Image (cartoon, rainbow over all chains, first blue to last red; front, side, top):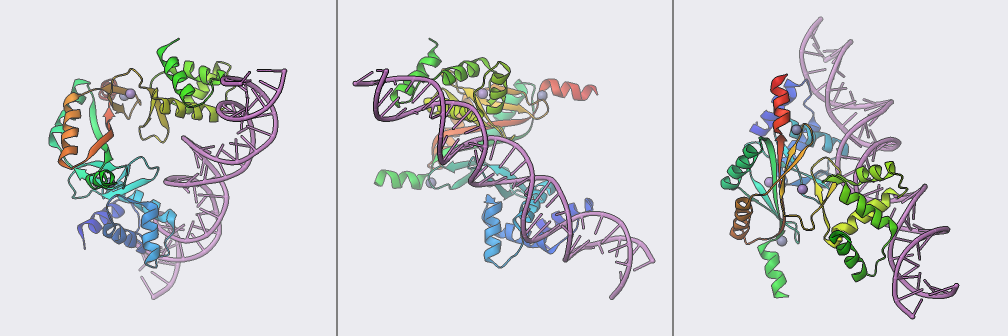
Length: 147
Length: 147
DNA sequence: ATAATTTTGCGATTCATTATCATAATCGAT
DNA sequence: ATCGATTATGATAATGAATCGCAAAATTAT
Ligand SMILES: [Mn+2]
Ligand SMILES: [Mn+2]
Ligand SMILES: [Zn+2]
Ligand SMILES: [Zn+2]
């Protein structure tokens, strides 16, 4: 049993929830899908593979993943929530290409430290943060100058 | 005439738009209201002052403010867009208290520089960015430890 | 003032997400 | 394995923020 499956089952048993084939299937599909996936995208992916799980259940289950600490929800400003596995994944922030919608992950310990410094200076205790850099990626830049 | 009014009128005339009493009233109310206001909040504020301007017009006009470079839209994760005057206002980022919803503004040139460095390292050109620190503010912290 | 153009308020519409509810599945105790 | 209590599911309706369509009203250049 994968560690992600174990984590989810642990959360399920701790909260008097139930292991269902739907939840297991969604977890498998989620782990197989690309990072930063949309509920709708995951739904379509699974439908194409013959699943008949409803969209509401996809939403419910992605929320469950977030509550269990398996995943986190992101809002990249396109109006749809995106979900990514964060269990056993190092914290990172995002570069978002507004041209091709590619998402590049990065980590920068200096920035993280400075954020803490800013918080401290303001008597603020940080629980979470969001750092997103919007712009144009290298390959889209190249395409643009070529044309 | 205030500089904000001048900027808006300039944008209006450059785009064959029209100066209306609604737009002027919304601008006045917007400049008078607290920063990071919601369309709905601005609508209610104006209604309480006897305005009969419709909500759709508030939305349309706030978008106009953004297009004219007067304001910017923010998304602080509570599902409603917030607008703030940014014309002649120095760039800054935000600390958001999840307890009392207070918003503290800060600027940190070191972080800005590091963001550019990260972008460069990834061949990325930044157009805009979003840095939000979510947590609990000093006064809410104090209240919590007191109880 | 006229006429062309833009704007407005209202209500309808959209879209992502959540709620409702009847039916089905799970699971611990027997 | 069966039962019974509880939770989960799919289909559909509902929600809420934001936008759209349209007829009537307002603005602006002539
Ligand atoms: Mn990521
Ligand atoms: Mn601000
Ligand atoms: Zn790109
Ligand atoms: Zn607070």
